[in-house]
Amino acid sequence: MARTNIDLDETLMRRVQKLTQLRSKRQVVNTALELLVRSESRKGILRYYGAGIWGRRLEGIAEKPRLILVDTWF
Image 1: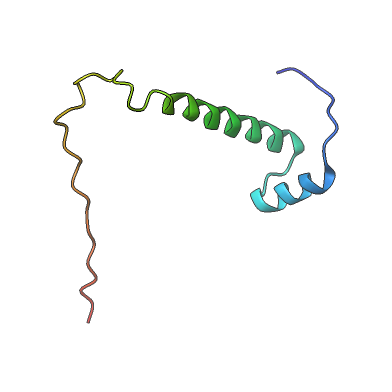
Image 2: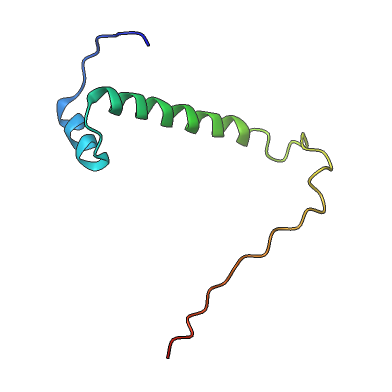
């Protein structure tokens, strides 16, 4: 892991720590970086939507039935 000095918005940092219960600034920054990578990766996948790269392999695959819970307590 590399060490880096960065200037952070302290008000924003306190808000994030309060919302997420993350204790250290390092945890906040690492979590934010992971979320950014996931978000950007999803955008890359969405570019292929409708492009036909999946071929016919997914055709005919039925969606799994969903379990519906019914409350029968009277």
